Image (cartoon, rainbow, N blue to C red):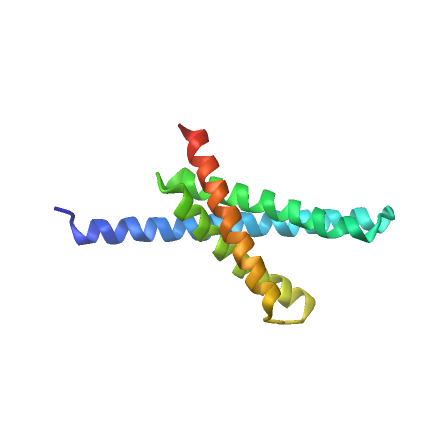
Length: 132
């Protein structure tokens, strides 16, 4: 039998690890975007490169966030990775909306959330496989 206080403690640990992983992913995104913005200040690149580079930053952010999350929580990489991808996407939306002083909830947020969730799930599978 499982003691309910132990189960509750495990949930608290998982939530703490989820928030920590999401914060790490967000921090990587902020640093990556800042470095990219500084790069753009000195180098003129075609506008068509901006979105793909932003997506690469997002992929790296989610991967390292999931890796941090799963370091403290065993198994279920697909589910936990998807959860982190979604939480990170929502946190990133809030932070970047605050920075730009513009909160626009539209279909783009839905697509970003789906992308983050699917990407998180894939990263979760990869991270669990790497651990083995």
